[in-house]
Length: 333
Image (cartoon, rainbow, N blue to C red; front, side, top):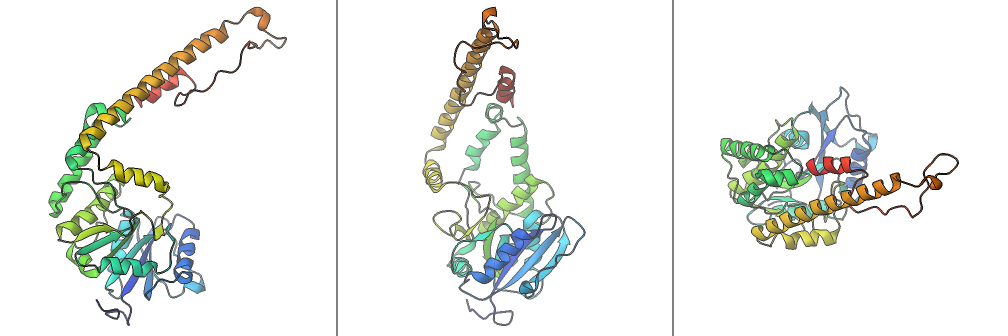
């Protein structure tokens, strides 16, 4: 792939989504980083404004070279990215970022460009979700599982059905599992975007936006390309505030998803049962302590009329809330 294909010798374009109901602090911080941290290759920058309020984005003079486009506030950041890559001059490669992103390393743009240029690769991102098989994922729609998770009993099955219906209507193969790149940071080539007809920009509800996120990876795979995480660890080149997992926990997660699903599910049910048992035992202890402290001898009442205590304050029990009523709510939530 030539480095001087299009747009006056520039091959790459950075597309940043901005939600204009927020202050511009995060956006300006990211734009400053793009100028201060070496990218490794020249690039053009576009900001696409999702207009939640009626105001235009005015960038300071130091960012006068940044293209700004405004659009209706639909489709979240994915809708903004979809609009952005179709505007103005065409580029061979696009890196899509949310305005909250933080650049961590030099040559950040080059890292994405190189990865997306590898044979057979169609989409690159910072974080790939675990490869939970669709069959295994259906366990979460079982009434007992959704009750233990504190979720509405019917919403899991309904949402999964909606996702498969959407995939079928778009001619997208959902594959064997739900693994996909999170739509916080994505890099891809123009030929891929053209082949999959871009991103979905219609979602207005959060779950629809999740469907649109998953559909990007599945559409790329259906078109015959691979989807890959940039580094071995998530968010190794560009970070996002949504990523707060400790590296050790990330490693544990990688290992855990290699355990057969039936063993994971059985372990999960055991943990839920133990947790419920612990909460019930804690509730009984609180009831006993409450009965003890409310039946205090009159000689232990001080001059203010407050019941004195003949012993230390009872210790808090991990996972137990302040009252039995609250614990009943917690178990049934």
